[in-house]
Image (cartoon, rainbow, N blue to C red; front, side):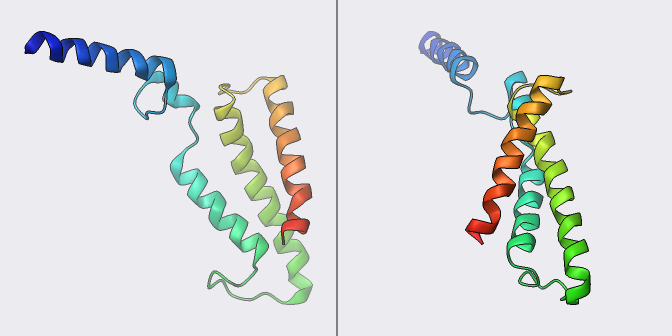
Amino acid sequence: MQKSEDSAVDELLQTYGETGGINYLDAAATLPSRLSVENSCTDLMSLMFPGFRSEPLVSSEDLAQITRVRVRTLRARLKTEICRSLGKIPPNEATEAQADKFLSDFFAELPKVR
């Protein structure tokens, strides 16, 4: 029985390397940070629905500045995670450019989604 278990373990380990989908190998370094994704979702909700997440309501004079700060914060957080997902930490110039393109397209769609 031990031999078949060892064989099963070897085969499982091989699938981990081939197909990924686990959080424990070197390949997991290309997965986005769970905490960062959660924080990004919170930031996105704040952008899409200001005041909805029990945040203090802001005056209309401050809304533009607060929205700009939220967009910059979210963009920076997402850029790091996109570069990581593209397999480049620290990112090279091409990876950063690709992440910037994804983010520009993403942010351009937010007004339509809202």
